[in-house]
Length: 277
Image 1 (cartoon, one colour):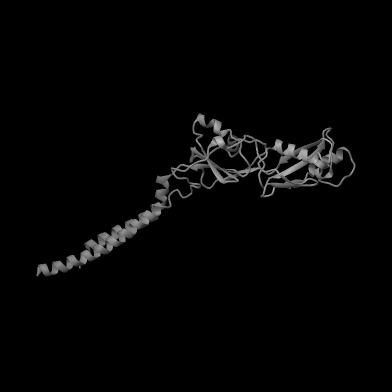
Image 2 (cartoon, rainbow, N blue to C red):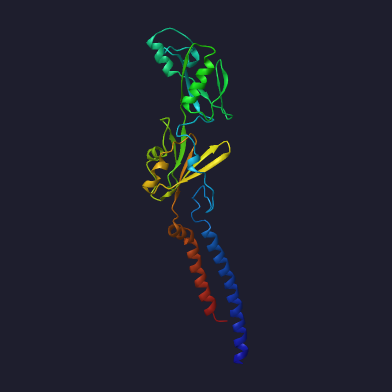
């Protein structure tokens, strides 16, 4: 009699335990999926074997004109006299010093197109992409020498910007480059330094080139990296300081809902095992 009651009881408990095991598997799957969300705020990840571009091939230390640059253009004679109205930004009029002040306030900006061409009055299309400011001024002086005697050109890029991600979650800055040859270290200083979570040994500089995006990585955690920090940034560079992983904190945040679920399952398991038939 005792055996006939015991066997059904054992069978029921085994069935309940099998159901609970299924729930346990589902819980483990939830834990795994939660683990996949840890440190998802880290951008521009590169694998262990990623082939970074060589800093030795980064090119000249001088700023080079790029597409979407806005350039102010002034044309003078060698004696310093303004040659044509296109550089003044207003129709010609007399007025001495007042006119010079108006000219400074109303300078015209010219856009470098996506194909690297800048269109200017009289000389037409000029390819300036990749040239330093000095080289571009020399090229334009040569072009305008067909129209004017000993021309003197002054150009300035007015919209140079870089994107800075200092390694702090939710923080990024657009840095305007006031000086022509601004270094990476200066940009980091303008951004207020790097974040408390930043990994100074993994500083990435991403630059668009004709061959596509190139990624350079620098270790600025020691003084040996100071020479790398002196490289001149270009317009539209992306500077990304990789954050340090925060496994413990983010794992706790990710698992906190599942911890409550685990407590519920534990209670249910105890209830199933101890419930009489």
